Image 1 (cartoon, helix red, strand yellow):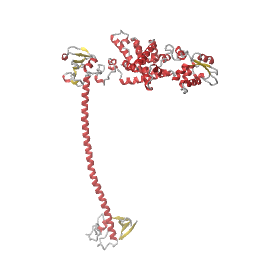
Image 2 (cartoon, chains in turn orange, cyan; image 1 turned 90 degrees about the vertical axis):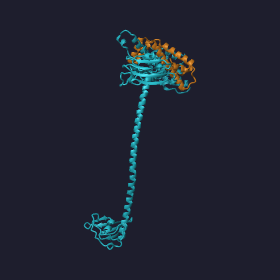
Image 3 (tube, one colour; image 1 turned 180 degrees about the vertical axis):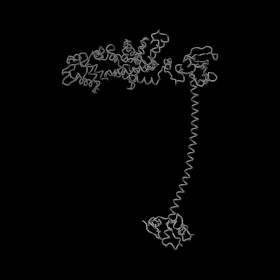
Image 4 (tube, chains in turn purple, cyan; image 1 turned 60 degrees about the vertical axis):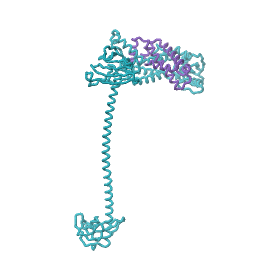
Length: 108
Length: 507
């Protein structure tokens, strides 16, 4: 089960943080994870699938969209694990600012 | 208090307690008394009222103001008694004194009013003049500011390379040239920016960049920009991008008004990214709306995460938050102009243009939806399995597989540490809930666990391998709720996972 909590921060060596800093860091990691997984998923779609996803996004239900998404990106579990592992490595080597900076850059 | 000071015929002199004297004359027919003025009486009697001395005056004339009684003309002072004359004189003096005092007060008041009234008129006049002056100054200031604002708008438009289509502009170049000269901060280069409106839809921005290279940009009738770098010859034209123009103008970040969004249509938004800049301006949602959406998205996804991680409530909560995120996502995409390109709808061949549209759609999806997409996939192992039915999902959340059987992940999570102990309900009314509370209290160092922790502990404990079968055997049916577990028999044995206890105790 994926949990991004204080245990993960301890695993990353981020122990000397205030509660607010811990919360901010956890949020940053979650945010980065969501966005990077989203990027990877979009990259894996064909043009037709992109079009279909957009249609579902605007017209379909959340359940339909999510079901379609998980069916269309069957290796999403691996993507999630891979992205999370990379984020963890980045935080370990460069600190949380590297993740947030990259996250900001990639959003533009 | 009053007393009769004297009587003379039908005239009575009355002295009051305050020393005032008044004369009253009785009506010969009705006998009713009426007040008469003392001066009038004295004058009628041939005396000077001011002094009340025995000065013989001319024969008094009888007038309408005189007492209505016919006062006989008598030789004074023979007509008045010795007692009456001083009293009458005293009353007259008193009355005159009051009269003079009142007159003096009236005069003083009148004088004061005379002083006040002109001053008020003066003040009113002054205020009026000041108001006029102020109004005039404000009007001048307003005109000045308006003029300055117009100049600044013109300068900004010129710096952006934007052509303002003034309604009064004639097709003549000379008549419609708007110039703005600027000098770079370092003084290296000068550029003269001219907006010239020639043929409709065509405009020019010409000048010299900071490297001294001349440029002329023009916008064709179809809205595309071209640049020529041959100085005034302007013979060779090449397609120009927004970046070309911005670079020549020495502007770090700006946007060029595209034909889809004419200059007069409203304020220009600076795109946040290169990707956004490449999109037609009309398709970009306002940044304010995006910001609100982003906050709402953060909130919804954050709440979904919290619900997924805590496990304290039904996963409906997380599902609801994710659904909300999807709605926001859909709203963003709609505003961003999402849709099917005409060629694709018609089933026609994919042209390079429609391929561009597809690329644009992918960029738009990345820009607006990637976080929601990612969240759905990240959550796939948690909430996804729940609301997608029985076909997909991680099978990680204990008991959420939908099939009624705990999944592999659930067993691993619950049995991961491999440490269990067996307890039993020891008395009637003993419950798994009570055992959970005691177990968690001990694990938390004596701190009382919250209800949701006990609930979660009981739920996961009941779903441990073996416990569920025992419940089934003892009840004849599977009761997944801890409410049902309250009716388990005394002596019912169940396993407790230390891993589950530790995880829930940590919160």
